[in-house]
Length: 430
Ligand code: DSN
Image (tube, rainbow, N blue to C red):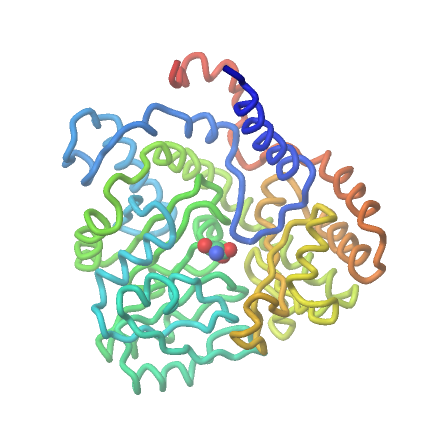
């Protein structure tokens, strides 16, 4: 017997951990890190169990603690998100969307969705679950200068095509979407507003962004691991009992059977972190994003959304065509240990999906690691060094690794001595 295969596997993940957690500036707008406390809770016996159904009404025995955890998770999330009904069972944002589409629309119905360059998620498109369910995709009018929905034309189009779903939110969201403005006309044509809050959930929980469930969205779907810094997962929420009932019937048994139970307690602890630290965390994220955008702009980068002050969220979007396009720039930055992703932006055609002009940045993870506005200024300087000054890759990478050494600890969490805590509370699985 040889342990080489085991060592090889362990080594790969060890290298990943060291690189992404200790040596990189992570600016992927859809990621975040959980706290050590949440990490500890995540690794529990719950990962081995089943609990189909809803709390206290299961198809399996042995769930008495899971029931309490799930009920509490929905309750605390509901308090944070201003929602009467929360369902934590979707295992991802895509699953949450699929269930909502299926609950509220049927094959042949129309859905009005943002163009991909304006932030629609793949699940909102004909290539994803929306198309798989037989819904047709109708393009939402978008004002590229404002980097937001063109409200007047959206109202006209809703009246004209009568969509069953009007999908707001999504993967590029710099400014508040016009939920209130589109609610009346959507109801007039018998449709529903679905707001995909995946990117901005933490900003909503921290009360630093729009409040979709109370501004008029019929249902809000989300993942739980972007600006909301929980384990990977999904959820849906609403203040409408009828819609909740429809959703509940669909999420199980159509879209999940078991809902990955180890993430529930970890999400609950994250919800408590957001209850106590969310306001400060979310306001720092927004301040940091704005600073990064302004600094990049002052170095000469083309930052989108200038007319409206660049951003109100965790995101900054750049047009990097002059540096060779999104693919080339993202790959170059990766060699410098700056992790970003290429993105379509207004003006890009569908054929440009593999080499779009844009780069999307998000500051939520680096904010969670304790960075503030002065660090954002330094990150902008590193972009300048890498892309405008064209410093050698190794020089920029060394600066990044050195800089990151000061930011290894997750902030906005409880100050608990995990060694003492774990003896009593976390006897995990031994
Ligand atoms: N595709 C992800 C994003 O990066 O926004 C969300 O699933």
